[in-house]
Length: 457
Ligand SMILES: Cc1cc2nc3c(=O)[nH]c(=O)nc-3n(C[C@H](O)[C@H](O)[C@H](O)COP(=O)(O)OP(=O)(O)OC[C@H]3O[C@@H](n4cnc5c(N)ncnc54)[C@H](O)[C@@H]3O)c2cc1C
Image 1 (spheres, protein in one colour):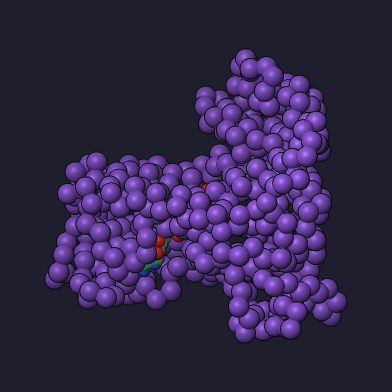
Image 2 (tube, rainbow, N blue to C red; image 1 turned 60 degrees about the vertical axis):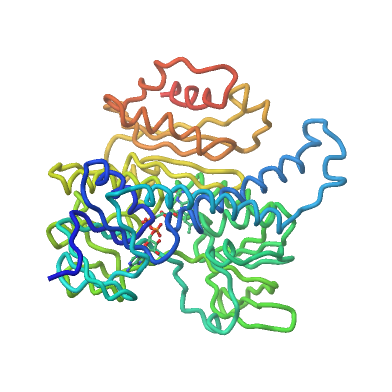
């Protein structure tokens, strides 16, 4: 017999709060177990803090580019208040956490346990500190993910940074920074630090950075980033050591590539928070990489136990986690909905930014459908020339027979905003090209790029 019973138990107070909001609105009794601050990775060490830092980086790059718009001397007296930038980011984060704290405090239906949950039965957990057992009819596991630390020789003997320690602890701007990993987390930090004057070196094991992107996009992004960072491609970091000059990272064949910096950031992927949770006791199965196995309705291998967010390793973005949460909650109450990940957009807030939705050209070709691909540069619309977007472009992939939009990828100013029109066009109605071409677009805007591109089909 459990000490406490609820209608709904949520393990993890990041995107777990999505299910909590819905359950509360339905008048259910909800328990949320979260040892850390509410908001999880996104609010505390992911989306919100990094995008706040990137706003400072964008401002700096606007200043650096002022000459192009005949504004002279802009960089002359420009100084960087690095502690101030970090402080602004931390207060932004604090405000976000405060909203969630207030919501829970004001709610009669939601009880927050500041603790760590471990399964002792199918829908029963024990809290690590309090020792209390909680059971519920419906359980949501939303324990997220954390940095994956690769087994690199010497890494555990040097003080390295992760996204968490940069956001929580870093107060002085590094003069040089080596980043292990050219994925979106490493690249966004590269943009931030390089814009402020840090000398950045990236080690990336693949032939381009941002591997999951469409080939044309990742190639273009790699070239752009090489303008402000040293990028060692096809180079896995293999050894790390502390020297009198800083942390030395070695990689490539026979360790022939090397870089030394005062600071090292490890951004080599994410791993799920699923160990030591008693999942096996409950019969909740995981994949080989430790992600929780969930079916298309987000139910795990145990009835009434759902999982969503980074812990299932599908979307791995906040907007996907929240959307999964809505669907998982509805399904727990009798619905039978699924999420079409081919219509799940993403954005990378690099310089330049990148965004996309749907299939890449290489994946689309593998479907065996009759594919047509078109590309359009920003210079083909007036606003693209006005903002002086160089080498920026958008690319679309459609099914030539049905005219269905299969994918859209863009690199250049406002890419994270531009993708939305295509997401809506893919989601609404028949999802065809005409959903975009039949709509009037404001002139002169970068949105006209999307119109121009789809008019080519
Ligand atoms: C540097 C960085 C930048 C990012 N930027 C973006 C972005 O710009 N846009 C975007 O969409 N996504 C971004 N993401 C991804 C986004 O943060 C995640 O996809 C999202 O936070 C996942 O939410 P979640 O609820 O699944 O996991 P989390 O937010 O990680 O929440 C999991 C929570 O579970 C708690 N927990 C773990 N184990 C237990 C346990 N046993 N008992 C109780 N509680 C437990 C943890 O303390 C944590 O608070 C970024 C991620 C990083 C790292």
